[in-house]
Amino acid sequence: MTNRPFLISGILGLGAIVMTLLFSLIGPQPAAPLPNAFLTPVLAFEFARSEADVAAIFAPAGQPVPLVRAAMDRVNRLDFLYIALYGGCLLAFGLTCARLSGQRIYYAAVALAVIIMAADILENVQLLTITRELGIESIEDNLAALRVFTWLKWGGLALWFLLVRPWFQNQTGLSRFIGLIAILPLLLAVIAFVRPGLASELFALSIGVMVLLLTIYAWRYRLPAPPAAVA
Image: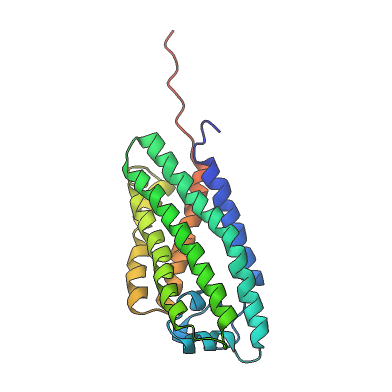
């Protein structure tokens, strides 16, 4: 492990990728057009802006509301483990960059990883509250809080990749490719903020691709061998 300093990040990132695949199997499946041209119910719920949006997500044609609600709650409860996996991956990666480079900028990435995880936890609390109160109490206040935590999480993720971008820029191969596209999530985030829907799906996909690339890099990276001693 001494010559593979990013291995912890790689292990946690792999766990996050496996859970992403699991969510696609156990989460609610789209059975009707979602609000704002979203493609996935989970993402549509996170970016919901009104009670009408939520109603459209939880009452799709051909599916009873309790079934959709149970599937959504199942994903959001498992998401607490997911937060620990992907958040730990980002945090460990930032710490390793700081240790290897000696540059303090990477500690900002570490702090941001903690903020992202906290925002995601608070986002889940709001999502679970909304499903519990749906049809019983007004959820407008919860939706307002949800918007803050959702954008703090997703916007934070886009910013995190910008903060670690310098690590990749002066390298070659996969590293340089990661550095080149690290700005893409932020560009898509701006579009998604103005026009949520398909742009939000592409934004989330870009974050997923970056986590995948980061995980591959973490597994592949090895420290250069020390120079041979001169006899």
